[in-house]
Amino acid sequence: MDKKTSKIEILIPLFTIISDSLSVISAFIFSYWLRFYSPFQYLFPVEKGIPQIEVYLFFILATIPVWILTFQGYKMYRLNRVVFIFDEFFIILKCVTIGILVSLGILFFFRDFPYSRIVFFLIWASSVIFVTIGRYILLKIEKTLYNNNIGVKKTAVVGVNEMSDKVYKRIQKDKYTGFDVLGYFAGDDAYTPYDKGKTFLGTYNDLPEKIRELGIQKLFVSLPSDEHKDLALMLKLCEGINVEFLIIPDYTGVITSRLKLIEIDGIPFMRIKALPFNIWDRMVKRVFDVIFSLVFMFLFSPFFVIIALLVKFTSPGPLFYKQERVGIDGIKFMILKFRSMKPDAEPNGPQFAKKNDNRYTNIGKFLRRYSLDEIPQFINVLKGEMSIVGPRPEREYFINIMKKSVSKYLERHRVKCGVTGWAQVNGLRGPESPIQPRIDYDIYYIENWSLVFDMKIIAKTVKEMFLSESAF
Image (cartoon, rainbow, N blue to C red; front, top):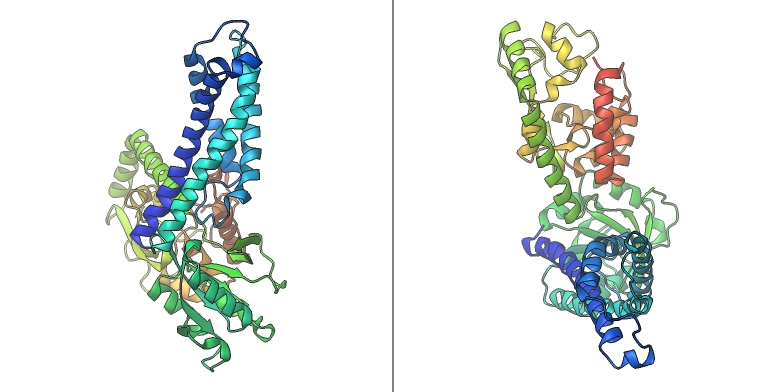
């Protein structure tokens, strides 16, 4: 991803949060002045004296998180908000109303101070105006950046027909949408009237190579009726690649758990494959990984020393076992484990571990039974090669075998692999558990990630370590 694009992805939502916060605070201050110091007081006389403004400021600063969470709940801090401000106005109205109602509910805990109901009505009205003005300014700034080719996402059109031609030309013309169309893909290289003036990138089979080569982040798919069958082929070819598929909704034979209808510059699309995390999600997950790993390793460091001594003095060989695994985007890294098997445990090439495997050392059986051999992988987490939670990493040898027979196997490489995962805490580990259900659980995790979900999996991991019958 382009560094400028990454900065825009961080700064635009951040500035929007700041703008909303300042708008609400300004609305409180303006409403206070309007009620108690403007000619408005002649319409509604102040009978109990003028309260100190500090009380109102303290209250708004305490309740700002409520307002921000309300706006976030309505997806108001996303990028590429290619909308007219009037389209956002009614959502702003709804969010402000909820913010005011929640604030009034909180007032029940501050009954010792007589807050003015008129002030809160004025706050509601002025917040709508101030937030709308702030967001209008930011929308203009965002569109100006895109018009100057700053922060735009690289895209391509898939298919050759009248609609794909319209999409190509519209996105190429309207840079303010935040997209830069690099060219188009077709089912073959035969010339059609819709090819004129456009850059041909290749056939559908060229998609994986060109996506990686050009850094394409979105594909706008518009297939003629006789090529709908090719959509499944394209999705298969792009397994494990972090690219979004947006399709013109004239093809209803595709059903996924993440199907969404979105509008870009007046054209409706169905999102049949989305990026698993936005940049803020990745930052939150990374910060959580680092903090959790450091705290965990600090608190349990004496226990680690005991395990290290047991491994070292109960069998010959190195303390750690290093093995090449494949992580996010197919990048290889060396995974760390406490050694649980005898040296040279695979003289005839890679093989899965099995129950009652005679290659385990005496202490190795215990470590494997309670997943204690995985503890050094927190070092991989700190290095950024793994996450605390994610699909378990596998070796390239087994990946090349399973990707041919297991549906969507490579999709698990769209996120960082994990020390633990949703499949593992549901009992899907060990040689006897089927592969396809594991992958289905991994895909579910990728499509439904949240920080709370990660915490739930970590909690279930602790339980699974001691109670699982599938551990070996």
